[in-house]
Length: 555
Image (cartoon, rainbow, N blue to C red; front, side, top):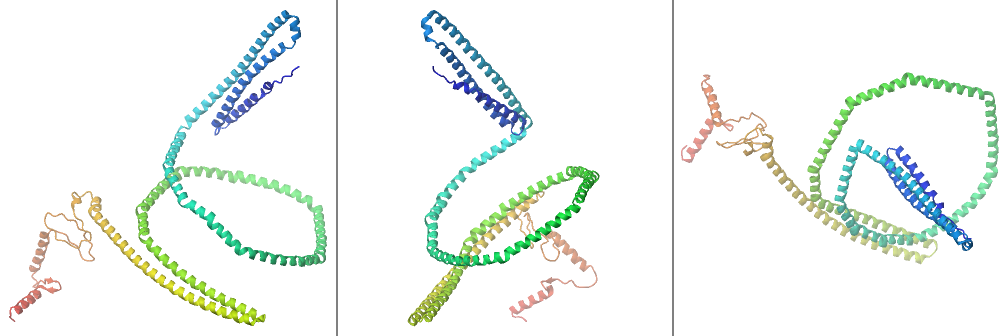
C-alpha cells in the first residue's frame, strides 16, 4: 500500500501566523502617531502577501482533497472486477462525493478570502483617514518641508557637476600621483633606510639589554627571597594581630551601641521627611508657582519683543559685515596678495637662504669639532694600547681631514653669502617696484573716486536744489572769480582763520564804498591807510615813481 504525505496541508499555519503578525503591527502602528504611517503601510503589505498565500494554499488544499477522493476510489480493484455494476454505482457515488468535497473546499477558501479582503478594506479606510488627518492639520508643515527639500535638491544638482569635476581633477592631477609616489618611492625608501640604519643598532642594544636584565633578575631573586623571609612575613603576622584587635573593638562597640544608633537613624529620617514636606508646602511650591507666572508675563511683555529685535539687529549686522567684507576687505586682500605676494615670496626666499647658510655653517662647525673629537679619541686609544705608529698616523689623518673641511666650509660660506646678497638686492628692488606700482594704482583709484564723488555723490545727496547736477564742484576751494551766467558751487568755510564772505562783486564794491564814506565823514581828521601787502599805498606809489625817474635819467 502506498503512503502519501500531504505537505501542502502542513503549511496552512504559515499564512495565519503572518496574519496575526501583521494585525499586531497594525495595532502598534495605530497607537503611535509619529510612525503610524510607515507601520500601517508595512502591515498592509504583509497582510496583502498573507492573503495571497492563503488563497493559493486554499486552492492547493482543494486539489489535494480531490486527489485523496480519487485514491480512495482505487483502493479495491478486485471487487470492481467481480461486480462491475456495483463498482459503476460506487464510481458514480464517489464522483458525486468528490465533486461535493471540492465544492465545499472551494466555498470555504472563498469565505476565508472574503473575510480577509474585508479586513484589508477596513485597514485601507483607516490609513486613508490617518493620511487625511495629517494633510488637514499638518498641511503647512508638509508644504514647508517639501519646498525646503525641493530647494536642497535643486542646489545639490547645481553644485554637483562642478564639485565632481573639481574632485576628479584633484584626484587625477594631484592625489593619485602623490599616492603613487608615497607607496612606491617615499615609504619604501624611508622603511629601507631606517631598517638598514637601526636594525644592527637594535640587535646589539637588545642583546646587551637581555644580558643586563638576566643578571638583574638573578640579583633581584636573591634580594626578594631575603626580603620575604626577614621582613614581609613578620610584617604580615603583625598586621594580622592588629586587624584582629580592630575587629574585636568594632564588635564590642556594636554590641553596646548598635541598636540605639539604628533607632536614632530611623527617627532622624522621619524628622527629615517632615521638615522637607513643610519646606515644600510653605516655601518652594508657592515660590515656584509665582516664579512661573512672573516668567510667563515677562516673556510675553518684554523678552519676546526683545528677542525679535535682537534677531533683526543680528541679521542687519551680519548683512553689513558681509557687505563690508565683499566690497572692501575682499578687494583689498586680493590687491595685497596680487601686489605683495611675489615680493613676500622673494623676501622669504632670501631669509630662507640666510637661514640655510647659517645652518650650513653651524653644521660644518659641528662636523669639524666631531672630526677633531674622533681623532683625539682614536689617538688616545692607540697610545693607551701602545700602538704608537697607529696613533701618529691617526693624528696626521685627523689634521688633514680637519684642514680640508675648514677650507670647504669657508668656500661654501663665501658663495652662500654672495648668493644671499644678490637675492636680497633683487628682492628689495622687486619690493620697491611693487610698492611704487601699488601706490600709483591706489592714487589713481582715489582720484577716480574723488572725481566721481564730486560729479555725482554730492549732487545726489542734495536733490532739493534744481539743476545742481550740472554744476562743477571743486572741493576745498580757496576762492574764485565767477563770471556771469556761469554756475559754480564751492566749499566755503575751509580756511584756517578769518571770516569767509561770498557775495556778488557789486555788493562788495558797495560795501567798500560805504566803509570809505564812513571814514571820510567821520570828521576826526585821521587818514585812511590802504595797504598793498604789508606796505602803505602811498609808499608803493612813491617807490614806483622813484624807480621810473631813475630809469629815465632823472634823480
